[in-house]
Amino acid sequence: MEKRNVRVKHIKGNSVSFSSIFSIGDTATAGPKSNVIAVQKEGAIFTKKDDVEFTNYRLFNQAVKWPKNGKHVKQQINHHTNNINVHHASFIGVETSSIFQVGSIGNISTEARIKHFRILHDEDRNAAQST
Image 1 (tube, rainbow, N blue to C red):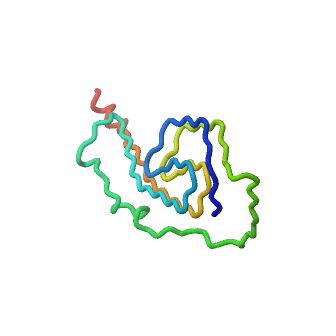
Image 2 (image 1 turned 45 degrees about the vertical axis):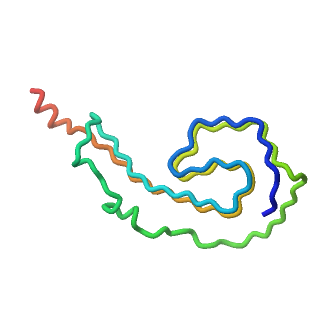
């Protein structure tokens, strides 16, 4: 990987979270990984019975099935200058194993596994209790 200078005048961002990377400059290897269980509950009162564990869901334990290597692409890159110039860049969010990179990156492998639950009130039960 040919190294270059990075000149950034202005970057505006709102958030970088959950195993994400904001990088200015060259990076040899990056591998952010996130495991997330998100629980959204109507009424927002959580009790011990709402606790969830990663081990209870196969999603977090199974091996990743990466795509098989495709055909090799021969490429030739000619950098006409040793500088990467960024005048202005903006982002709202870099989220869950994502990368905002200004510069070169040699090897990247990211992984995000997310299990999302919504716990809603039972309307029949609520109607019976209100009468």
